[in-house]
Structure formats: structure tokens, C-alpha cells
Image 1: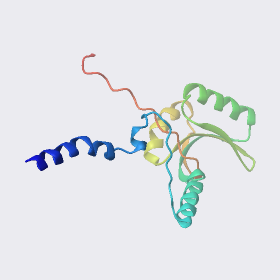
Image 2: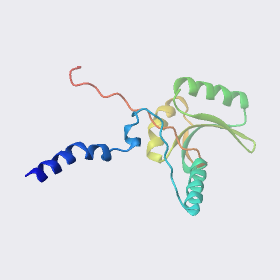
Image 3: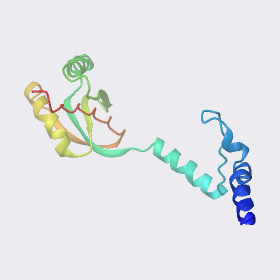
Image 4: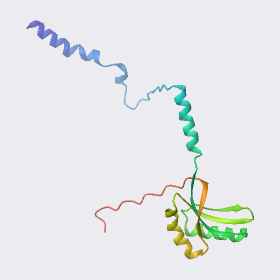
Length: 151
């Protein structure tokens, strides 16, 4: 019985002092270090993926609202479109002798159609055109969810 009592006391008193290491006693907000080891091939693959994703472009659709050779008229139309649709990217594009005003960047023709309907009223010659090498369109801002108590 005495041996059992001494063993139990040794477990209760001596074991906790061996169970904690110094790194566990540091405060939670103290700076730490993390060492990541990866093979050189994986580092090259990761760097290449980052590089490719930075310059990625896609083929999509834009709306062409002006296609003539007057720069001043194109600039006026661009300013009017920017004023009416401030969140939609638009630009003047020079192709040969023509000056074009292109509005929006869309992944599908269906996405472009909604804005085209609105632009067709003001600019009857507007048309949806296919574009290569477009920058990715900006992400739409999420609308705040209505709270259930409001009416």
C-alpha cells in the first residue's frame, strides 16, 4: 500500500514538471517562426504558377457603342458612358483608321446582353463584339442582405 501511495504522489508531483517544455510557456502573442522546407522543383512550379496567374487574360465580350473616325466624338461618348455607368470599365480603342468606344468586360454574351439592352436606347448602333486577351473583369460588389425585421 505504501508503494502504491508513493507512486501516486510521484505521478502527481513530479510528472507535471517534466511534461511542459519552454516553448509552450511563451505568451500567445509573442512572435514565432515557421520553417517550410520544400523541394526546389516544387518552388519552381509554385513561382511559375504565380507568374502565369499574374498575366492571365481571357477571351470574352465587350459592347462597342461607337465605330467611326472622330476622336472628339468618341471622347464625348466615352465621357457620357462613364457618367451614366460609373462602375463599368470603358475605353477608346484605335484600330486602323477607326476610333472605337468599347464598354464593359464580360465572360459570356448573356452577361453582356443586359448592359447592351440599356445602351441600345442611347446608342442605337451599339453591338456586342468578341474580344481576345481581355483583362479579367472586376468582381461585382455583393449587395447587403436585407435583415428579416426590415420591410
